[in-house]
Length: 334
Image (cartoon, rainbow, N blue to C red; front, side, top):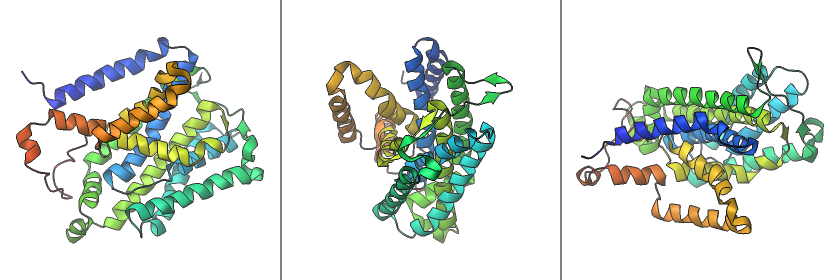
């Protein structure tokens, strides 16, 4: 008897949740740190998936938003501000910056938009590196404190990991609700056919700006958590390489699939660590595996799984038109 996609998805999700809950007790502190990094990068990739996967806008600026959030939290918490105020400020500031950047950037599309966001990412990185009076430049900001929750210190690795995991769960639930709402369906309509969406009364510019700004805001939240995780930041992690890595997470996992960023972050964050047994060759092996994935799974791992599990008759019938008032997006469940 063939098992339905929904059953497989629920089973995979349940196993993943169980693993994430018990994993800290199976690994040494470095392993817990890597898992925590996966959680933080997944949040940033969820934001980019809103921009790229659901609204169809290519952005290479996500590392800049992660960096802005990190520096806001690092600069203020080391001067006595409580973490939660800097956390909210980081997310709000990146949302506003993303909205303002969207106005000129979204006058262009596709690879032209990628160049605009690339320029913004480079500008922000140069500010981080050169404005020592604000960011301490290459010397970085150290001794970033971790937060307390109801008097419970998050200073140790395992409590902080669960703190991050709770954030991921809440952000995932909020993102799922957004995708299932009319806003999410409008994002899909703008991505699939902006001219048709506009003719149906969808304010394509407003929805695109909102997707861009929400993705930036999640990048800021991810950056705030990243600063508390590593407790030392300098400009290096927020260069173009991080934006490309986040783009890789979204595309390899499955752009436009809800669980795409989760799986993509496994490939981009955890897989290189698992390949370290190859010593000096692990980066070559990682690059080869990613290239093979892109050759054989151009729609990402979840897109490939979706094709395997979809009956042939359905796959030959062609995609259904996506309208703002139509059913929930087909890719949401991953």
